[in-house]
Amino acid sequence: MLTNRGFRYLRFRERLTQRQFGARIGVSVALVDKIECGKRPISARTHRLVRAAFGLTDAKINELEERGA
Image (cartoon, rainbow, N blue to C red; front, side):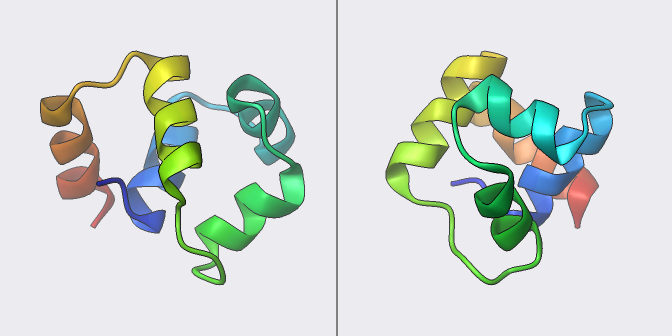
């Protein structure tokens, strides 16, 4: 499962603003900010949206987590 650190690392890796990232996965800027700051966990729905938008496999998520830590 993607954590807030992996979530933020993915956005930085893709060189997207919070607004662009939110638009790409279909969530608000406020939610992106709350997830990145650790104020909200990543829901199963948001996790699915991120996976679909970026074509992430379990292996790629694990890589994001390692690099984002």
